Length: 216
Image (cartoon, rainbow, N blue to C red; front, top):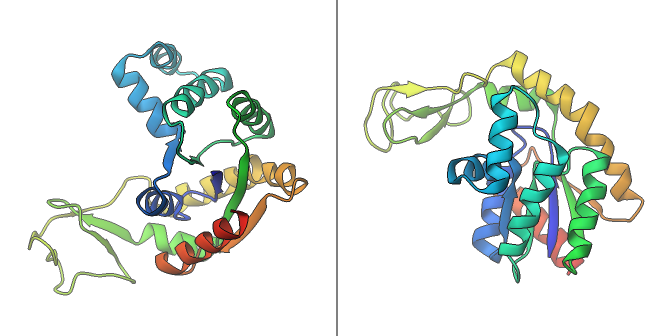
């Protein structure tokens, strides 16, 4: 079963993808992760991507499609979770071709719906232990003892530099403008389901499982 997870940055796509990998033996195809791995490994596609990125340009749809095609060939017999692709209708059409060439069919598109204000709070409040990377949140999951990691007892914490309100709102606006418009393309085919991305991790996973089980 091949599926797409859609939602703005911070909606929880990565977390839910990993749960599907663990529970269903699926393969997560994250374009960002794949590009970095291909560049590091020096594959033919990776070398092309590296040259483009070093020139300060955006990686073309053709390069991304070639990369996804490689990973689909490597993951035969396993369902794929597309995370970060497609971002445009042109990419959606390219994905249809990639799947069709391999005798595969997209089963479902699951959008994690979120509330922008709540998402801003969720993202800007998160931080991790600098020693063991245990996750925390200013409001929802502070350390039991202030300034002390519950896991390793460390006293140093860090935040991602892009976990700030301006960046989050910019990414939300970009998602609405560029990625959300691919939804009608899939809605016409009856492939889209929506789940409450603001629910707990377990509840979001339960809703996604219900969608996939019904599709199966």
